[in-house]
Length: 209
Image (cartoon, rainbow, N blue to C red):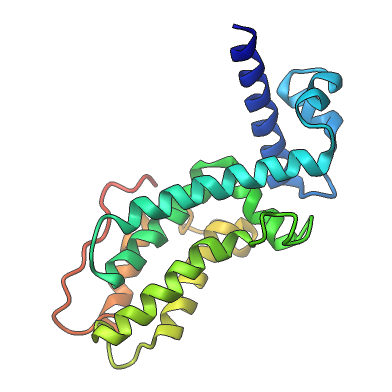
């Protein structure tokens, strides 16, 4: 039982830290406020995470692990590289909306808060962008891309699509583009230029708005 309580406390601290880091960034986050949000004493927090950098690395690693798990799940759905690209786009967008440690990991990477070496040697966006680049090249080699689309252009397209989910400030006030349900609509519009004629691709259904 004590071990279970300790694990729950550690998780509560980690999630509170993730929320603070995602909202305020590394420089604007304090251990005292994290402890208050987690409902623990500062002593209890530092028992689990001795320093702010250690806690930040814990948040980043949690978000990175969640991202990698989601990507592996997306990659297992199809043997078609372009379909994999579409599925990864939806998975990353979903994570940015639903997983606070992923949003924090994304912001920490943008800020380079602790340096890439401290953040497990890889910026968060490179976790998924590496797969996108590989799959885009494979799709191009297979002839799956339309004449007006290259592997490099497809990668740029995915980065731009996800930028709005990664950084809400990039969206204009009152925008209707916040929900995940807009992604299938955008892909429908783009596939006529991205995909070669005759491609049979599926867009995820039931995406929460």
